[in-house]
Image (cartoon, rainbow, N blue to C red; front, side):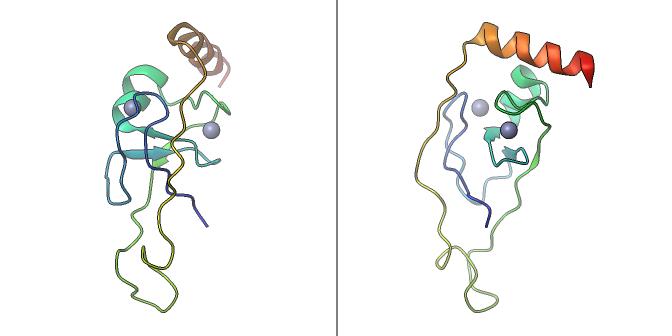
Length: 98
Ligand SMILES: [Zn+2]
Ligand SMILES: [Zn+2]
């Protein structure tokens, strides 16, 4: 099951489960749309992959055993260990070879 992480790893803005601004890579690394567009340029700093909008998990259980009450969002906030310079260099390197 997809882990709905609570924040952008870079700017730390809250990204609640219903947020249309959450972006994820294939490893569930989670950033906000603004950081993906203006800083990361669609390169995940952890894996080099691209991003897609995170799907919204329904609040109510349309089917038994589903929905946010049954499968709540994650609570562990993550923060990228990379500096701005490192992020820019990595993104440029990956984009050059994509
Ligand atoms: Zn952000
Ligand atoms: Zn990633």
